[in-house]
Length: 338
Image (cartoon, rainbow, N blue to C red; front, side):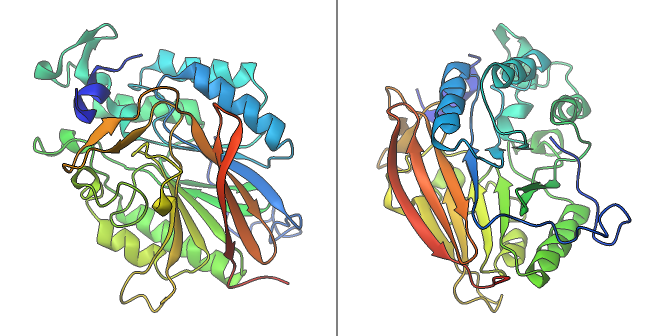
């Protein structure tokens, strides 16, 4: 069974912050942060609630002072309301950081492949399911009304990006490709420029990886995830202290290219910006040597711990199943307040 077949048969928050200058923020702007801020990033739960709970328990032990938890998409296996409720219940039953930032993934749009929760019916897609209902389910769960948003982990800016269309509703030749509106691009450009002026690093969470970045992104399966990849790269590529976290591939954090710097020609930033793979909670995959993938098999449950200091960011790769650190990287900051 290939990756796409496996994904199709498997069944198994926060509002944008006010802009600077508002009355509510005038006395505390910019938001302060501690000398070192720690937070965690995971992705691709996809119905594996047991491993999600195990990851939360491990994070509570290793990062008891975690300022936030970023979840980079594929929160659910298919996007049913009861699946979102199961995630919320699991979160409630396990210790977790108070602030959680949710990014939307492609699995949040898989309800239309099913006639009912027990009957796969891709031949009759979308089975009466509207695109709007899928977004409303995510918005209700995440507590906001856009797929993109900004929050703060201990004073560290965190931006979530997300598709604003499910591509197949707009073009029958497409499926999961990401589309961002001009409004989202303008918002992203303004927020990155704002934080650059304040000399703060920015953490960006998105589900789909950008091409030619972290593990798996030179595989043909991940070359066309974004309909506007060049435009997004040109925005992110201007800033050496913008950190992009992406999931979707489920590729192992032990690989050499789990963390890279992506240089975007024409941006004037010759050092590029850091990109990090968030691995997955649900299952691991690897290259099959033929341009596709095969499952790693066995237990797989990985994620990241991030430490933001005044002069550098340390990212540690964690195996939640074995309770061990896999590796770490220290990334110096170019602009600091101190």
